[in-house]
Image (cartoon, rainbow, N blue to C red; front, side, top):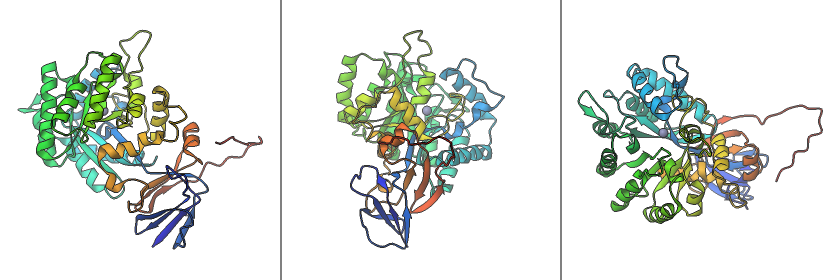
Length: 423
Ligand SMILES: [Zn+2]
């Protein structure tokens, strides 16, 4: 069975307008590709590889609207305390249902790849077990990587004789895909450093990727990013390692940042920035001028350092809004990081597509290339620029050549003579 998607504007394939799909794989991308069993006219719309959400807490989804818990201060640290109490009263089935709902919600906007940060500081590992089961259950329609994330720390947490470190290891043995960490939330710099050494050691032992919540503070003296990079570099493990948030790197002095950029290029370290979340959470102790709280995304892009955007939270104790629509994240992200130069628009979608796939190391399933699985989405715009300018909707998500969903383009009637300018 072959399908031909015609009259398409294909991301980073300027001269092509057709995609030929056979047996769920991309057979060809080009023009005049010949006959197919079925022909689908995309009306000149933009085709992208599916959205990748590189950093999302599926297990926290909609906990923010539970009347039992309320984050009065709006800070990250109050959220961690509240969640600590909350998770004790949750069953695996409840958690699975929450994660399933989150995945369906996120997928409805065109995401097919999620790196799910999942709290493992719970002696029963309820969230990890739930996330692993949902990952396997939904794998045909969505690719989920589960990060064993010790929200309360590796060494600052101990319950029923198990430390956060022990629980990370247990989660990896159960099948988690990545080693997580949160060195800035350990009780001391020494513990933070010890946690980084342990993260890298466990990743190598179990052959897993690394994704650390790293320096999610405005402290311009935070240095866990430097330590993580050095540790990964020593082990030749930079490309397998992702530093999430790294907010404080937006506050360090330029001479230091310049030196570190060289080291990041050398190590191949990956970065994830969560623009909406950190715009909301950071800068809380500042009066004015108030910092944006984001890491140096534009400088990473300019220095060929891999960086992706993530949603992070959907209505949880850390952040009261969020939908999982990566277009919203991209829009906020390119504003907050000033990625709006002429050369940026044609490649900005990398931040929510290819760059995330690279750090997840899912390239065998991912990309608009011949031979890859036919996974792609269709946006309601004729170009990458128009899609960003008008923050358009994703009209279709296609996985292995089959539609996961299809929506009709928005129609409206008006008395105005509408002639919208497009570029
Ligand atoms: Zn996070």
